[in-house]
Length: 381
Image: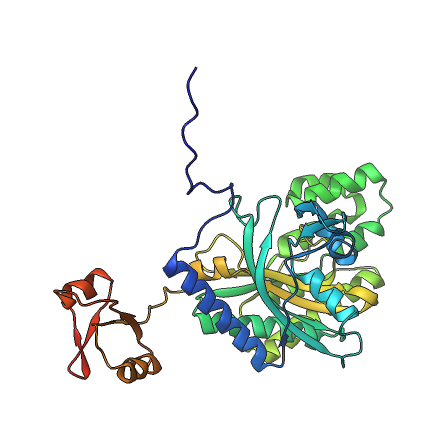
């Protein structure tokens, strides 16, 4: 019989990580840059709690993410609570309760951590960060375009290269298939084939809709071409209305953000659980993970809403590395007013807490590039 090895205090549960100084500072600065962009367009910041009662957090649009939520019992009330896996349902609750009388359109922004019971964008992610915006009240292509435009501006501020927005209308394919009179088993098989982008299976299963669905499947790509194909198809009036709304949203986005990279996938519906209108996924050149996603949905009290949630961890992997602020070592006895002036100029100051024999060596040991000397600063070789 052998003893178990001693527990390593650095060991964390799967999917949880420590962010050390450089990464933690870069993430915090990036999130604040995003929030400043959102605030400049009239989006007021709110901060919902990390933990709520289960029946409120996971009701309404929150029901779609219920299986992702950690649950625990409140020791005071003995009621079940849940850690939020997504902030958007909390914004819907705030809009419908505490801000029910606020003028519409209601523009709200948020940033904070979420905890997932399962994997996030990467299998190892269980604690993630979110930063986003919600526009509650209007239901128009211009409102959808505003969400995309602010997302594009925020990514530009972070310096993320090669950004593109992939648009879809998740309700379009189900509406079209609903017009086809398929039985439950055939409908499920066809939806699975479309989800897998299996054109051969679609052609075999779709019957009379096979030519239309196959053309839609192959139309995915640059927005102009995809909408041209979609516009040429013979579609039932209700389905045509959905396609027209998608086209109107693309036109509104391009009018507001000339030159933006837009793609359209007319048959994509996977993962859009509570969304009801135009949806978008954000990508960047050279990055496999999506940087964010969002779209139109029905908020609490049946209010139309549209939003975008960005993933700061993914954004910072895609953005150029941030240069840290220059650190200045302050030997014992440095004038506090001079030190304050350095900080006001953007330097980081590191105080010596006692006299040292070799201030230069101590400054280098503490990762400082400069040392205060003679009323100025000098480089540490």
